[in-house]
Image: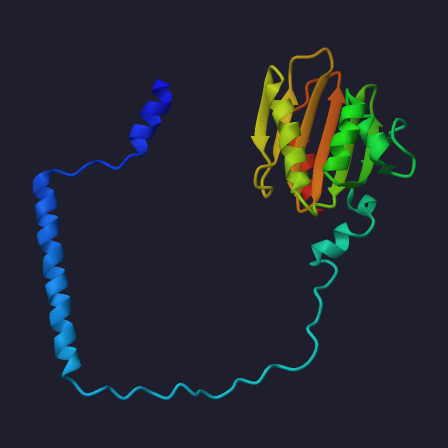
Length: 238
């Protein structure tokens, strides 16, 4: 209760002293008197001649508006094949055998990647899940990477934003975690988790109706440069 009272007090405007109030009242009377005098003087003058309200009509330009080229029309890209926007696997890396071969994750498959698939399934229905494109690869004996582009319809909510922020909350709750802002993404962030038998890193960001997720695992420490490079290059394609 004391906190509420303090907050209320701080939001209340400070009361002025009696002298200040009297000065303010006198000033107000002076303004009113001056205004009345101005009206009297103005009333005795002849009406000023104002310019005509009629102005020349500006003709509307004719012809069709040229559409944006495909390279600049983001909507055209993201409504097409999302898999084409995913980063290509590095030279020498092997395809991820744990992912769908066609590169798509439907609602059930995506929900099944979470600890509580049933709850996640219901949440994705509410969030108007549309589709998810995924790619991944293996390199060396234990390094693996996975990138997901999850798209939402967003008729009633900004689900891509919420999804990204929720994943960021989970990442920040992990102990021994370092994080950095991803340039050009607004509030996108990259994380390296250092306390584990298997090192991991992730990046979470969004653009428009798409939430980007990157997950990296290795038996060796993962540096900032590695996860940031993946995140920046992937976001540049959206």
